[in-house]
Image (cartoon, rainbow, N blue to C red; front, side, top):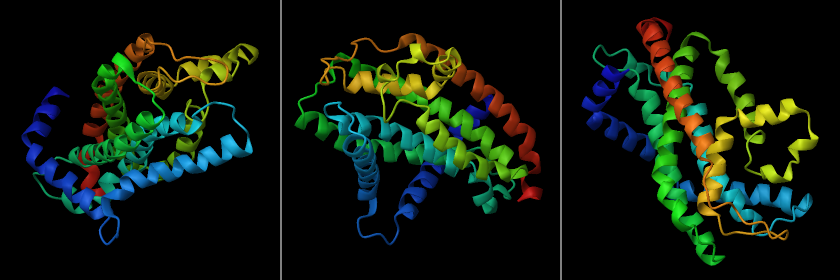
Length: 273
């Protein structure tokens, strides 16, 4: 894996060119262009806010800010999975070149969606300023949380992109799994509202085994630690370090296993695509 990482570093100029090309191609011919990177999560937030706050009457104050804070990193994660799953197949013309390292393609997808995530942060910052929600010192952990999510996401995308070349059904299954994963992650609700003590213990175990649950909790606590609701609940000043440590270890193990899977299958990419 370390040798593969060094090889990717040698191709850093090519990676930057491919990321730039992907960003430009995504909104080519669009009037608003890169503005859609900010408008897409904003409009999705409006949809979920309408459903859960207006129709289902969620009592949480500034619920749309909570939603947007979770949707931004989730869109980076879900878009990377769905696009990265078919990245080897879509980049067949590059994969068939003798000297081209195929692992660049899933990496480009994750990096492109990471940049879109950064484009959406100014809107979140505007919400926080407008509602006078101060992130506090927890904001210093932002680079660390982004790195943890990046490693976890890239590990998944690397394995899925290799397996999808030989098992095309993975792309169809993944669409439904991502939707299920979304509702298993505290984005449109908070863990304290679920009353897990009244649920079967297996629900509690499954929820806590979800890596994205810990990552999302970190984002919420980091940005919204001073936001309260009608129940006078204030976010804990401490980040979920135990959960983040577990996700970090899992992400590194996942990345190592995924690289072995990728190297195992990449010799047959040219024939399969």
